[in-house]
Amino acid sequence: MLIAGEPSGDQLASELVGAIRRAAPALGLEPSFVAAGGEHLAGAGAELLVDLTRHSVIGLWEAIRKYAAFRRIFDDLMRRALELRPDFVVGIDYGGFNLRFAKALRRRTRGTDWQPRIVQFVSPQVWASRPGRARVLEENHDLLLGILPFEKAWYARHAPGVPFEFVGHPLVDRHGGRRPEPRSVPGPARIVLLPGSRPGELERHLPVLLRALERIRQGFAVEARLVLPNASLADQARAIAGREGLAMPAAEVGGLSDALSAATLALASTGTVTLECAWYGVPTVALYRTSWSTYEIGRRLIRVKYLAMPNLLADGVVMPEFIQDAATPGAIAEAALALLRDPGALAESRAALGRVVDSLGLPGACDRAAAAILATARSL
Image (cartoon, rainbow, N blue to C red; front, side):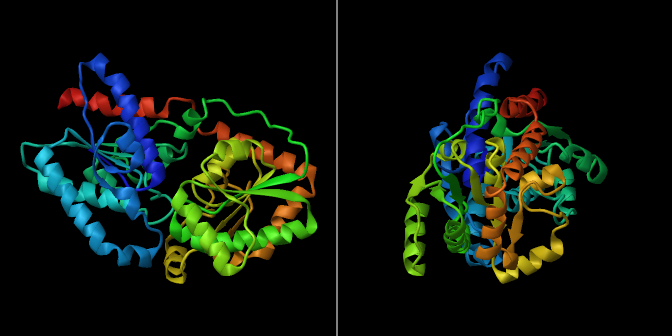
């Protein structure tokens, strides 16, 4: 049983399914999969129990509003797990849900004749906030698979009882393990707008980015592309731009690799996409805005200096980032123009992003994750 609640986790889970299928025959195993996830898991051949990605939320109040739906999904999944008794229950990212599910499952199965292996693939960011959650992993998980290089040492200090393996970052595999060479594209500078992959992010980020783009165009000749992961977000983007009276580039669904391979600069949400920008060596200005209540709670809990993952991995600013009230059109445009007007600054940014990508490990993250999971099958 796999549980993935975000589109990025759904994709990673489908890649894990493929890796397990490739590795299992050599061990004499014939795996089958049930899942809470989305279209990627369904496409990989898992029996989809619920499309959990449709319920993706961001922020405290959005989660509270959907609490009843999440509670129903949680209880239904627990009931199905108890009925199906899978050998493995693998949470893919989505720590808020998956850590609670693991704890409840361990409690329900303790002392019974069914002892599933509980695995978490992608560490929750306990190193960033609420480090006490590491104890939940230590008490309830048989294996934790991490994708960031600094996590192994962190867990060795804070939760040495959880078996941890750094498997590398799946981004490396998705791009063939080889960074693309920078492409020289004639004409004006090209900016890619990446406001996020959730409706709440789009609502808060897109108006800021479109107003920043207006200011950039006043001082520099640019072409712009807006790239979104699905058609529903593209429809939402058009509605937001119309409501706000803002000019917007045509919304492109998918095609992120093509857009970044030809980009001079990106304006992006601080999420996973900042690593995609780093992979393609695209200097990036990052932003993040959320509700006042979520920000105030997060400000008191978060223990890291940066939100953009390349900055965390570099332990320094390789992408200017603007959070909450600092994420204004003026500030973002000023940072973008400082890069666009200085070829040396662009080159320095690309070199720094290359060093970040080098830290992500070798190709084969999901293959190593599958091998680690299946290694525990021998004792079932």
